[in-house]
Amino acid sequence: MDGAAEVADARVRAPGSVQSVDRALDVLETLAGSDAPMGVGEVAELTGLPQGTAHRLLRSLQARGYVRHDISRKYSVGSAALRLGEAAQRSLARTARPYLNELVALSGETANLAVLEGDDVVYVAQVPSPHTLRMFAEVGRHVPPHSTAVGKVLLAALPQERAIGLVRRTGLPRYTEHTITRVADFTAELERTRERGWAADEGEQEIGVRCVAVPVGEGRKVTAALSLSGPAERFAGSAEPGLVEQMVAVAQAFAASLAGAEARAATGPA
Image (tube, rainbow, N blue to C red):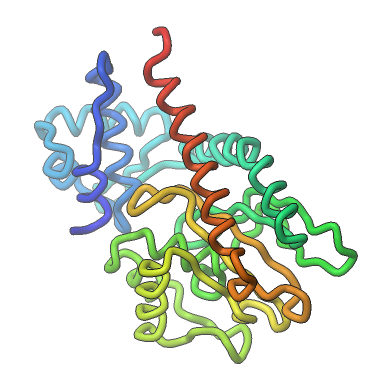
C-alpha cells in the first residue's frame, strides 16, 4: 500500500464535522501522501469520492493555490500549502520548548526538534547545551535523512516502500567514513530503528558528533523527532545509562500534549 492509500485508510471523521470540508481535506491529504502527481480518477478512487466531486474540489483548491495542475493534467499540492506548513511548524516549535528544555536538563547536551518536509529533514526548534563546546543545527536547516538520527526515526515511521523510494531519489551521499551509503544497509538500519524505537548517528553526518533521536508519536502517527546531540568525546549518546528511556518518556509526554490539544479543539464550541 502506498502513502496516499494509507492516508485514505487512516481518516477519522469528527462528530458534527462538515462534509464538504472533510472531503476537501481528504483530497489534500491524498495528494500530500503521494510521491507523484495524481489524475482526477486516482484521487477519486483513493478518497472514495465520485469523480465529478473530486474534480470540483480539485478545481476549487487549485483556484486558492492549494493544488497545482501540471501540463500532464495531473494534480499535486500547491505552494499555498507552504504557508500552512510554516505556521504548523512554528506552533509545533512553541509547544516543544518545555520538552526540549527538559532534554537539555537531563543530559546537558543540545536538544532538537525535527520534521520531514518533502525528501528532507528540517530542524524546527532547538535548545542549546549550556556547555561552551556544543553542537548547533540551525533552525530551518534542511539535511538528508539517511545520515541523521532524526531522519532515521522519521523514515522508519513511513511505509517501507515509501522510505526506500525517498532515499533512492535523493541518493545516499557519503559525508564521513561512517555514513550509510548502500540501500540494503539503510533498509536494515530502518528495521533496527523500528524494533528498538530510537536511532543513533555515530559521526555519520559530521565526524566527532554523536546524536540519538526518538519519535514523537507511534507507528504511522509519528509527527516529529526529538534528539540530543553533542561532541563524541563527551556525549555517550544511546550508551548513556537510562538516557534513551528518559528521552522516550519526554517524547511520549510531548505527543500526549499534542493529542490533548487536538482533542480539545475537536470537541470545543463551534
